[in-house]
Image 1 (cartoon, helix red, strand yellow):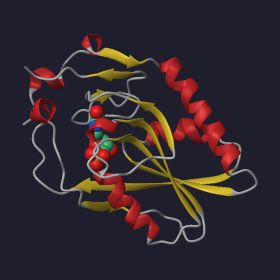
Image 2 (cartoon, rainbow, N blue to C red; image 1 turned 90 degrees about the vertical axis):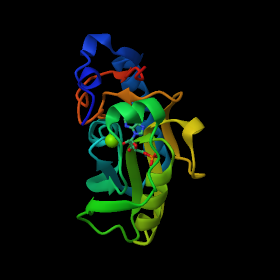
Image 3 (cartoon, protein in one colour; image 1 turned 60 degrees about the vertical axis):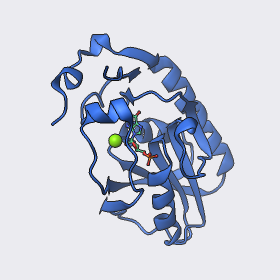
Image 4 (cartoon, helix red, strand yellow; image 1 turned 30 degrees about the vertical axis):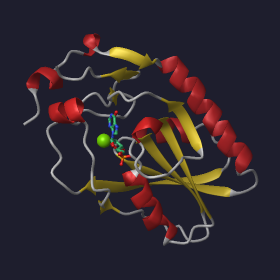
Amino acid sequence: MPSASLIWLPVSQLKILIPRDQIAQRVAAMGADITRDFMGQTVMFVGVLKGAAIFLSDLTRHVELDSTFDFIGVSSYGNRPSPAQELASGWDSTGEVRLTKDVDQSMKDRNVILVEDILDTGLTLSYLKKILLAHQPKALRIATLLDKPSRRKQPIEAEYVGFKIPDEFVVGYGLDYAEKYRNLPDICVVPRAG
Ligand code: IMP
Ligand code: MG
């Protein structure tokens, strides 16, 4: 079971890493980059549930292109430890991902932008990228709000990166800790146990 002391850490005790105004500015710039790169074309945004939902809804409102959006759901295999242990020692999935929700629209010959909350070890996105490429999109790009390059185990990079951050466990703006804190408007650091 998750550690209650960490789960119920009051929001006031979380340190802000990236305040809301900086997020808004950066997300707007990313939307402008996508608009410029795909000028005259259509794009299909595919958000990874649930963490990318808030980022996707803000990002797409800054994209001035004919676009659609969709969501994909994933769940990792393996015995994931409690969030408290995960914070203390980190957790590495096998990278094998099970789809819990597939996209509703065809990706064939479409410009697909996979939208993720955070690129950590890269295992999840590497796996997802393989699955999406099998659908033969015209182009596949990755947009991630956050990137922790120091944790990478698979050599994968995103074409659009909001912020590179150090190896901290962060929550807010869609990111969770045991499903909590997704609704925080700022990105905050959860202190590690111990
Ligand atoms: P990866 O396969 O290691 O790249 O894992 C990516 C997934 O792990 C993300 O989609 C998040 O759900 C989760 N994750 C990684 N780091 C954090 C974090 O600091 N806060 C919240 N979730 C995280
Ligand atoms: Mg998550």
